[in-house]
Image 1 (tube, one colour):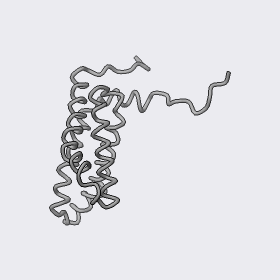
Image 2 (cartoon, helix red, strand yellow):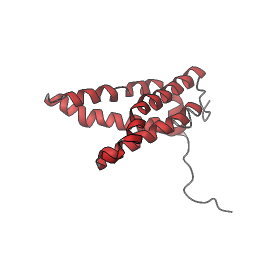
Image 3 (cartoon, helix red, strand yellow):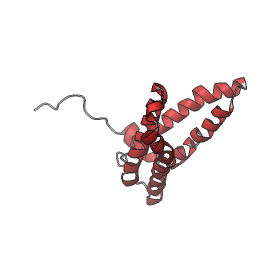
Image 4 (cartoon, one colour):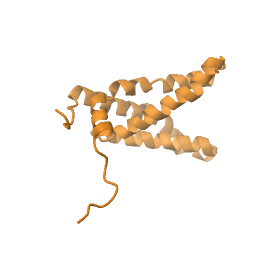
Amino acid sequence: MAGTIPDVSPARLNALRALYLLIALGMGVQLWPQLLTGSAHWVHASGTVKCMLTALTLLSLLGVKYPLRMLPLLFWEIARKTVWLLVILLPAWRAGTIDATTAQDAMGVGMVVLVYLALPWRYVVQQYGRAAGERWRATPA
């Protein structure tokens, strides 16, 4: 039926919940100790990235409760990791200049495949592609 919101199966919702939990715990165990003990020694760019990723772990906990409402968080995750793969890894691979650090980063960034697999794409297309956006101005009285 046109205009209806596609159902998202409980299995897909639970896959999203597991993904949010993986982000929250997997990144959180690395980032929270650093944030709590080592932030005074970070250079500006490194500190900014670590704070953004730590915030991602917190917001991911909301995704466990509200997997569909927090989809924009996964869109950001897809965007940042896909851009990294295209802008950093692909040119380095083509030039044959992948070092150990880049290879290690690629392993973590490559986990974006899980996000692509877990997203309920029919729902995403319906809600973010086909649905009308919010109004730009007040409704006339």
